[in-house]
Amino acid sequence: MMATLDPFVGLAHMLDHPFLRSAFLAGTCIALAAGLVGYVVVLRGQVFTGDALSHVAFTGALAALAFGIDLRAGLYGACIVFAVLMAALGRRASADDTVIGSVFAWVLGLGALFLSIFTTSQSGTGAVGADAGVNVLFGSVLGLSSSQALSDALVALGVVVVFVAIGRPLIFASLDENVASARGVPVRALGYTFFVLLGITAGVATQAIGALLLLGLVAAPAGASQRMTSRPFVAVWLSAGIAVVSVWFGLTLAYLAPRVPASFGIVAVATMTYLASIVATSHPWRNRTRRRPPTAVTPAATSAVAASRGDLRGA
Amino acid sequence: MTYAAPLVPAAVSSAGPSWNIVTDLHQMLALHFMVNAFRAGTVVAVIAGAVGWFMVLRRQSFAGHTLAVVSFPGAAGAIWLGISATAGYFAGSIAAALVIAMVPRSPSGRERSEESAVIGTVQAFALACGVLFVSLYGGFLDSLTGLLFGTFLGISDRQVLTLAVVAAGVLVALAWMARPLFFATVDGDVAAARGVPVRGLSVAFLLLLGCAAAEVSQITGALLVFALLVMPAAAAQQITVRPALSMGLTVVLSLVTTWVSLGVAFYSVYPVGFYVSTIGFAFYVMAAGGRRVASWLATRPPRPRRLAHGPDGAGLTGSAVRA
Image (cartoon, rainbow over all chains, first blue to last red; front, side, top):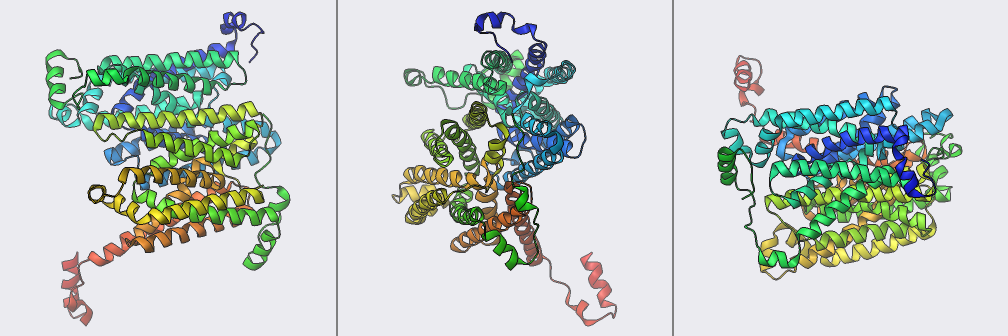
């Protein structure tokens, strides 16, 4: 991470560095996937699942390292298995559920154990063990090799393709499960597919911004886009766009200020966008003059509009 | 990034337990840092039990988790600025408690999904700030794993005193508002109708929760507060529904969890947070399992009487009926 003394000269040559090209390639694709999937996560009120998955991602990756398997096997395996488990629990799994909270706290405790096992087993080459733990927790997008970046980008693009294929019925089912299933949408199958996508996204995002920070790419862009528009199909792409822009700005920030971790830059930009969208849409005078009806999208409006126009528009 | 030594100095852990509890305790308590660890652990366990019991009852465990997560950047920032980490823990948690208290409660569906997005974003941003501060400070892994997954080394006398004073303040405040808080928790509408200041109590409780989360973070690490704040309370509430009894049981369980974890962690190289969360979880699983078994025994259809009289053919019918 060497920026030249004049930041703008450095900026012009930013993409000359192979590690930054890899970071931009992987980061863009991962952000695209996280933004799209994250929108549905927020729409379903399932951010808590993302939080739980971040614990699982950490433990899965470090368990793989501790047992000497490939990190990605543990990461994706754990994320997908737990995502399917959460899908099976369905909407019973709420944020304040002490059972699920306790299970995930214990999973995280196990992660701490594996981290410790791995660090002590690597004591000869300690820096490797220490770095691997930090990388899983807080990401290492600037440390990806070009082949890693390519495979991450392909996985993320795969998620995007599947999401686009099932996006319309998925958003319909997420807005109103009952109406959707009454109209013949395979709600359960869509739910499982979505959670598998979420698991893969969590796994791939862990490599970019880290297990602990992946909510920053999953929840923040989606929350911001939901604030800006009530039209689902605009919001879902807006969310992806915000995520991508956050990654670009975050990486640039990390390049200009080498002491700033890249994942901090990414999460900070996403959070600031969300904050700005909250401030911009909640002016006091705006609330007083235009009081919206309490339910933005009603089931009746959803199905009627969906049927007539093929578009889900906020009431 | 420098390589960090294991959390426990090898000179301490290499001794190994003698499995004679008196000898082992004697060995541990001969070390001043271990005495301080037990003092701090005891204080933290009591306050975690008392506040956590109300938190589980009020279904605010996610808020407790968030407050603890925010204590991480507080502590990391304090270390970076050269202030004591203890002050940072409290500053982070209490500031977050005030923010959460200011956000009005919005129960309707769409806004609830928004609220969860806000909480998730706040958590991620807080952790990101924490890692930024740690990175700016320079000593990357050493402080990082301690802050996230707990450490019991190097607790100073002064820190124990701070923990005890804050805990005493929180306990007094909690005792003073316990009855109306319980009323407001169990039935908010009726309590409000009878003139209980429900909203004020809710804000006050969040502040107490912030203090408790900050204290617990210092033993279990910012990510594992659930282990002491939630698990003992959840286990006790599985065992009994009587408020005073289950609260006492919560404190006992969290004390046992802390003491055993500290004792085990002393002789091992693994982080104390792992032991706290594992023992807490084991208590919870035992309590929940025990309750299942007890309720199954209570609701099981009574065995047909003739079965008891011996194998004269009647027993067969009995088992056939049961099958």
